[in-house]
Amino acid sequence: MTDTAKMISISYIKSTRGIIQLVAVLSILSIVTGVATLTGTAKINFVADQLPSSAIESAGFTGALTGFLIFLTSYGLRQRWRAAWYVTLFLVPTVTIQGILQSSVFSTPIVLLSLVVFLILLSKRRQFDRNVTLTDTQIAAGLALVGAQAYGTIGTYALRSDFRGIDTLLDAFYFTLVTGSTVGYGDATPVSESGFARLFALSVLIVSTATFAVALGTLLTPAIENRFTEAMNMTDDTELDQLSDHIVIAGHDQLTVPVVDDLRGDCPLLIISDTNAQSSATDSDVLEIHGSRTSNDTLERARLDTARAVVIATEDDAEDIMTAITVRNRDDNIWIVAAATNKENIEKFRFVGINTIISPALVGGELLAESARTQQDATTEVAQHLQKERLKNK
Image (tube, rainbow, N blue to C red; front, side, top):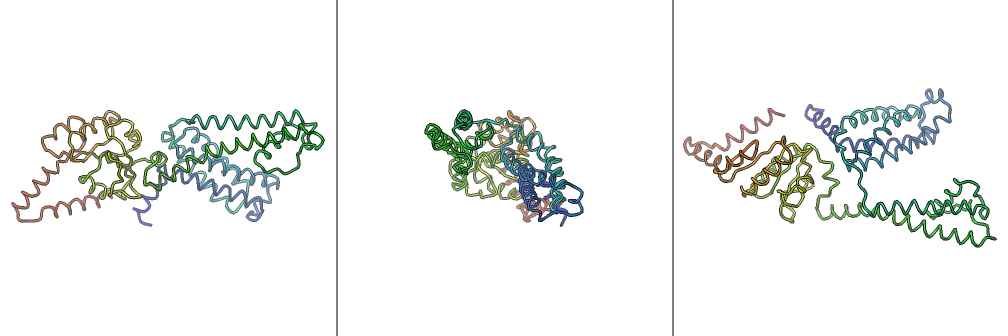
């Protein structure tokens, strides 16, 4: 592996998107290891012999459960929820301990991966700064689900004398859960002599099934909407939430096409387009959002707080200056590069706090004059010089 490939790999692993995917991989490996431990097909004998079988089986079961929980928290990490970061930070060391106790052939990779994930995740605390926000529909669905379980559990326990297999509050909760999920094992049923208990069981079935359907609908609707978004070549907020160390192209026209082509592949790119049409220069590796580039809401969606730089290079100097003012007001330190179509506006660009200002007309005029003066292709010399500088910096 070349040094460049190593640097790219390390940079990806340390990125926010990379650590989220590592967490997902760790969750899958934890589930696989837990299942393999329970089946007894992947035990390391000289380690397993030193531990009681009950400890190994418990580690296998809890390991699979922990892997499932980590997989759920990876969704929260994609949303940059601080709560998901805390939960994952607690669960990852648990995987390490479970991997040691499981004494499986998968134990070594899962222990090493969990340590790497924990260290990188610990350093990414600032990236996960969002509080969990629930919509009114999600809150209502959650309350309805809790209410249905409480209704079934309390009612079944109160009528336990009319049920077979119901002796404790846990039995009542179990009956309500399997009834609402339509599994119905048949080990807990109302006695045939009690018509009221049978009617109550039917009410539990109707109420619980309805609330389960509402909860699933609330959970699956955002995923379906994201699929529609991807099919229509639009960028959703989930993709934007994972952006870090990216370059924002504020405004897109013919002047920015070569900029996008040159930057593509070097780092993540996000284009802010004022029109609703998909830009012809974008593809799957370039994200695009639609909205006013002078709007604070649009710039917030563009994740300026994690961006590397902003490029403002359209043929509308007035709009570019307003964009630069808005960007600078939101972030005093971000690097801004701009193109001044009219060289008379260079001082105005500099006044609003742009770091690098290029005037295509001025640079083009100087290149034309130099080529006429020397009878040499000045543009080729400039291109070769820029190529050498790029290779030197890599």
